[in-house]
Length: 261
Image (cartoon, rainbow, N blue to C red; front, side):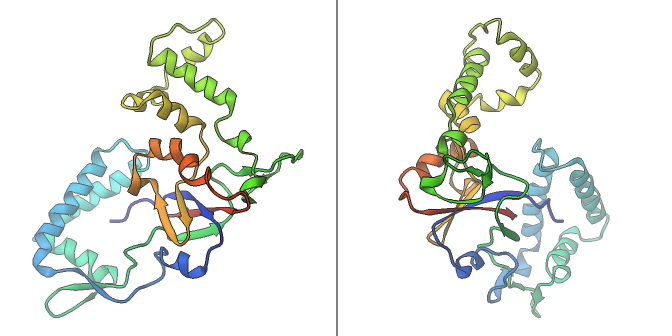
């Protein structure tokens, strides 16, 4: 049972080689390795059940109603078989193209370091592009030197910082809105996500998340970094500039890309 494909943005810092990208490409096979042992059939099934059930209970928008419906039907079909664990094992091995030996152990050539199935230079439909300093045409760019990027236009703009700081003051600290702010507050109070998911965060993390420029992943010197592996996504985006951009040489090349998980 496959999940949804998720688009995400990647920032490549400096020059890169095809070999560096291939290391993380799910479509490029590696040498065969043991992926599943037949003796673990029941454990594999029970572990997957925990994942499937967490998806069914999740409020994450990535797990759509259609996906949950198909997952529910899939689990129902499995449970109607004589041996659900074996049927599941057969599906994830033989029916998924893995090589199975005489003991029932399954071997894969899938890249366990894979981060993407699709890669394209440039931003077409997602992410925040670059703006160039002194460019009066207001054109957007996917590739610039660090020194060429108009960071004041995309990262922690004063107006944005002031706006989200006031939202925090009003919704979290209980400050009274001004007459000018009241119409905005009345609208936003019906959007619980604007504040609700930040109740365990600090004001700095909240404001940083909404005002900071960043990407979902970074490739630098052949090494891959992404929010899921390092830290909470709110901290990831609020600290992105300081972590990956601030101390870079001014002449370093920055390339924005679109990828799919």
